[in-house]
Image (cartoon, rainbow, N blue to C red):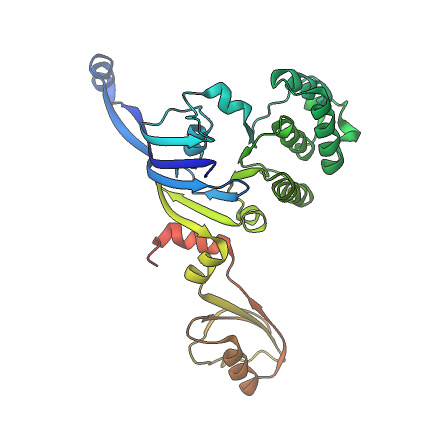
Length: 328
C-alpha cells in the first residue's frame, strides 16, 4: 500500500487585483477584484515506502506548494491527499509526528542555544524514549561527524554544519517520510556530497521515504531513482531518470582531441558544435547513428589523439523540456 497517495490535487490562490492611478487605487478599496492563480492543477502520484524521489520544477512551478500540502501546512482547493492513512491538513499533529522536514533556507534549531540543547528539546517535543534518542543521536553523530560542534551555538555553525544538524533534528524521532526542500543550497562541493551520501544511507538502512525538491539536478541524479517534474502547476513527467535520458536525451557528444587543427571537419549526420584549438565537440543522434560509426568516420579521415563520449546531462534535458515541452 502506498505511503503517499495524491489524487487530482489542486491549489488556487486569490491575488488582489490593483487598478492603476489614484482613482483606481481608491476604487480598489471599495470593490475588490481578484485574479485566480492555479499553483497546482490536477496532480496525481503515489509513493511506496522506501522510495527516494526527486520532485522538481522551475521557480513558481508548484513544487513547494505541493510539499506544503503534503505536510499539512496548506489546505488543498480540491483533490485528495493520503499520507500514511492520514489527511495532512485534518490531522496535523499526527502527521507531524510521522514526518521529518528540512527547508534549506530555514532551521528548526534554536539560534542561540548549543546544538545538543536543540536536540534535547526536540526529544521532549516528540516524546522520544530515552534509549531511542541516545541510539539515534549516536548514529547520526557518527554518520554526519557532529561531535566537534554539538556544544557550539547554532549561530556559530557554518552552513554545511547547520545542514547536517538540521537533518539530524528532522530524523531523531524516526519519521517514516522525509521532505527536503533545497537541502544543499549554498553548500560547497564537500558538504553537498556528505548530504547526498547520508540520504542514500538512511534510505537504504532505514527505508525512510524521501521526497527531494531542488534546483541542483546533480542532487537528483546522484540520489534519486525516480523523478517527478511539475511545470506551471501540472505534472508533466513521472518515471525513472534513465528512462528520461533515453527518451529525451538522444543527442550524444563526442569530444575529440585532433593531432592538428583541421578546418574541413565533415562527417555524415554529425554536427560540429564547438571548437577550441585542436579540440572539437561533435553532436549526433544516438538512435540513428552508433558511436562506433562516428568514431570510424572520424579516424578514417583525421588523425586523432584522444576522444571521449559524453552522455546528455539531466540538467540540459530538463532545461529543454521546460523550454519546448515533452513533445520535443
